[in-house]
Image 1 (cartoon, rainbow, N blue to C red):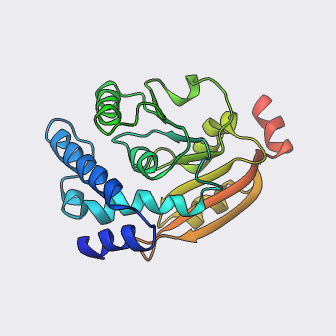
Image 2 (image 1 turned 60 degrees about the vertical axis):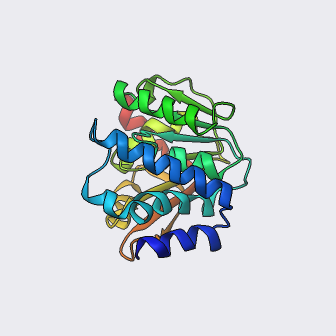
Length: 216
């Protein structure tokens, strides 16, 4: 997919209005400028920033339970998918990132994009964030699936939807955790990579036997 096609898909298939496209343009400019100061994403990927980062993040909204759902993005890094989600979504969003310079970038982006009323940046390890429930949990290139489920479980209820882009190894990662975790898991195709998949799950919990094993 080329960059023009990625933009067209955002506007057509995901119904992104012109005003929001302008804010996404601003975010892309912020991302590129900051990438000169700290390594947020690979330089090569910026050549296809709309495909590799913007549309790749925006597509997660296809699986949100509602436009007003509360959302936590773990390991938000450069704001992917968290900032993109916040620009396209109406619900409150929390971006969790422990690295100081990335936290500073996220705070600056939230301010410049006019998101301060709906978006909170939390600059600590995810394990230290207050355990409050969210409607959606997302994470992109944050941790292996078992560790991610362990960290995110404290924010999850039976109604929470997990939306986890896991690339080309999604099926293998999911298979590897099914002996320890239960829930309604499914794999969805990525719009930006024919070989990549997104894990979507609900009612996620650690199996009783696995809980007992952890205590020992």
